Image (tube, rainbow, N blue to C red; front, side, top):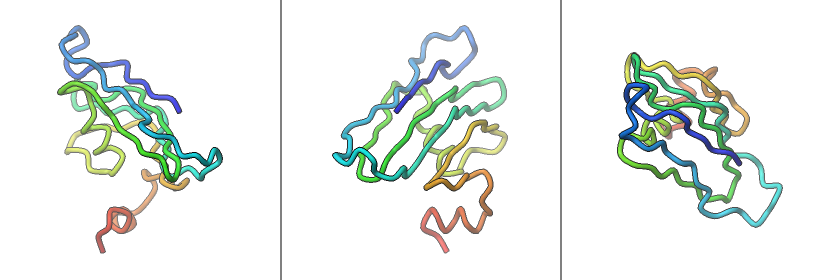
Length: 118
């Protein structure tokens, strides 16, 4: 599992915000558990603000997973990108795969089903 976040929220010279860190809280005892969620090189930009930059991680079935960081570090924007609920005007790059299914390629109806809607 890898996790990185090289850019903080705000202008490029703004060092006020610390980047979010991806943390595996508890690993499943089964080493070859199927991959539940894979995020590859996820980036989110809103205007000139780089809210998330280059985040990658894998969550296998049975694992507990957390994202920690200071206010404004990109935790919520990462979660919103994973579930496909970014604000208007946000630009997402990278891949989000749920059980191997690319979330960028699913229909709006399928996305509602995955979120638990009808």
